[in-house]
Length: 310
Picture (cartoon, rainbow, N blue to C red):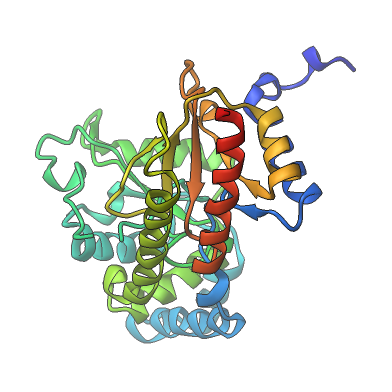
């Protein structure tokens, strides 16, 4: 079998970059890694899974009146391609984001790339969309649990005679992935019920943790690179990532050197530009490290950058 016989997506160079990035992390276990945008496991407990499943099961029984056999079917069988927690997601979106849509406009998906906002939240484009022109993607990975791999799409655009774009998306999903795991949806549903459909308020402790990490990263960048010509970075109001511009191009070869010889790992930004760009930029994640590791990591990054400038 030749590579040309395989799926065309395997020819995408980003797959090789992800593979090499993972290999660098494995080869340099003592390095400080700013690469993964993971939420910290400090807020995860195994017992939470069982508790949230019970919360959702009680919701099905006490609020929706489902008998035991229907609850078992809901949790353990194939389900609606559009998702079984659409109404819960819609209520949470109304409270947290000011997005008011019918549950039928929501499709629960298997994950989505999304971050957490740490200053005052800005209105989403969807919350001010009056003409049904915006499709909104969201995820519960950062705010609930990455392991549940549960996200959603809000698509309330009219299609045909009274239908919604969400309905058409659900049809496609029913062929691709059948449905999002009912167990994963139940865990997320239990969390939404438990927080009174106000996920942002319930995540305040996590948000403050990530906000403090971001402040540490920005402060250390200022202390180490403030006087270094050609080095600039953004100062985001929230989220997990900072983009640093360097006065020289970086690639996977330099990443390998940085991890091996300097003990610090980062993500080349060029792989986030499908049409080209970002050759002199790196991405640093502040989410997964302790403040002490962030401080040490930036110090190591300063040595790497300083030697290459010299």
